[in-house]
Image (cartoon, rainbow, N blue to C red; front, side, top):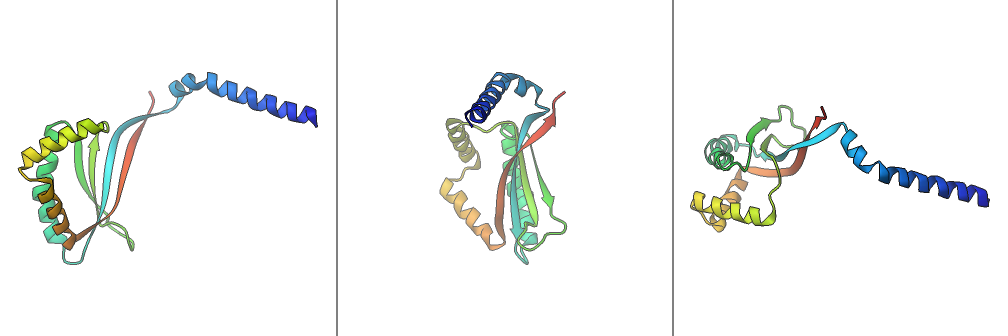
Length: 151
């Protein structure tokens, strides 16, 4: 019994040692590389709200996204339609693509810059967001990272 336990302990120790020494090699050999982040917000549009929400997206949302893109905060944005939504799924997905997640101080700096550009207080922006609840509900919010193949 002691021999079996000794062999198991030796095998585990060897495995751990091998994994630790191969750590940097493992990262270099990993076939996938992390790329841009995709923030995906699923939106369910309530019955009768399509026109009103589409108008808001084509005006306010687009204007806001163009501002963040002009500042280099985002790389791209898009809207995808769920052609065959099942019960409880979003009708559309709002997507923002960005290179990295900003630090806390950077987020605060951007928020102040955005507020100055929008010429609206956070309170006013929150109220507007609440008004859109009449015709839409945010179903989910995902933060995805694109993976590309290592060359």
